[in-house]
Image 1 (spheres, rainbow, N blue to C red):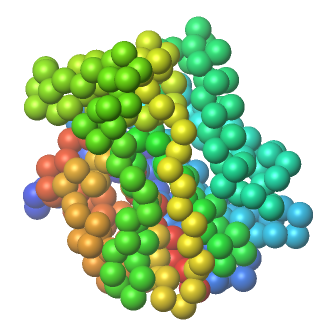
Image 2: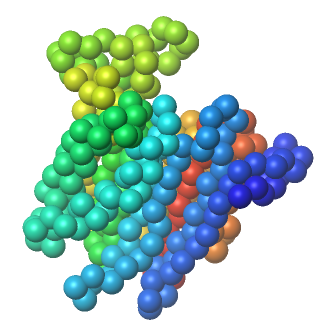
Image 3: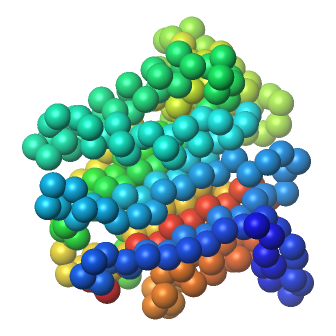
Length: 278
């Protein structure tokens, strides 16, 4: 849909979506906001933000998928990645192993269907909250998750940038180049070293996620998931400071997007804010 975002003191029409929800007990609330960037292509960000009941457990499922070279791969991830994770037999006893397996099998399926899904790819950041007590975060690429503990930002993910994994890429026969432009890219093409899809580059890319687990205790206030359209222009602590000032998580997500636009981010911007303990 079209909506108006105010930045640089001007109301600008842009393609955007937003929404919110809460757990059945109201102990977890979440909101999201997505805005298409200025690039001359369709919106390539997709998201998941929902709370579901499964075998007597309450699961918060949150994700942002930031596509490149088309939106087919992030759209596929939106439909299938969480279901693939939850279908793993050992999910309840070994969530980390299940997440790793599901990321791998999902990527293999995407590659095997490249004739339908195209040659593009997607980054991913996923968060699974179990009974408002256990949080599992995983990512490939540069979409990021940041946790606020008593107001202090704690990055939960690792930005998979080509320069940080140059040795692995070169050992696989690839190379990292800053040409064209001034951003390090795998084989001069892709600005992340891990991603789903990207069949033409896959022999030099990884798709295995980094995973973090934390207990959600009284110190944990909120979680921010966002695509790099936000993190390119905003530090982790700045994002936490903005989100903490706003009680409604949907309004907080919107404000983070607006602030990114104010800072002239030109990429697609997607943001989810999750409030713990209401």
